[in-house]
Length: 107
Length: 123
Image 1 (cartoon, each protein chain N blue to C red):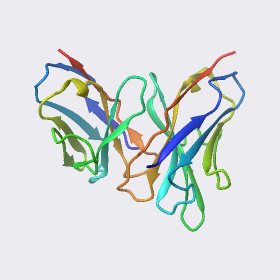
Image 2: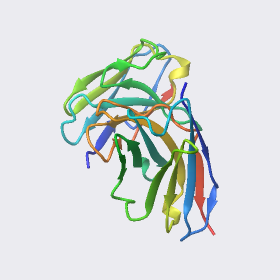
Image 3: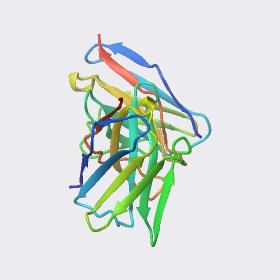
Image 4: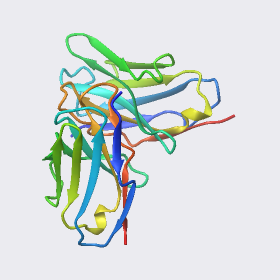
């Protein structure tokens, strides 16, 4: 199985800050990496697919990059509605696997 | 747009069978470009993919090794839904269970998701 490791597990930042979340795969997954946002009591929602492609309706302050084993999700200017937990997920091979998440909190 | 509506009991006794259904609107369970997934989430295991079914000239089913001896995922074309059965449950199977739509290519992702069902395994 491909293990996905996210760091940090949580972070605290003020509104307007630029934040970067990291996801590392235990083996190369090419560009088959997706990012989800989850708010309490809700299902995860797709933000970015294929490393860097924004899902329709997702604000442009979100961006993704990386390839192979190392990936990042960047929020250029944190907004109140961005406080949530973010998960990466590889679609390279089954079993499809998720990272443990990064919880973004208000400072 | 595609919507998924989950149904099923929220409490299951140990050793019994967990059964959930995911009703699809706006798409077909027999679509050649979609996969129909079950995923669960718990504090101890995080988000865990359980398996999927999809149709591409014939029906395919994939299961996670961790549950493959206990799980059945099945499509129902007459009702346009798909189901999850997990046998011999233990308290470790307590989780929020989600259904989701994926895609048949490696570039695909999960969207949309069902609303989630908290299933508690307890006597």
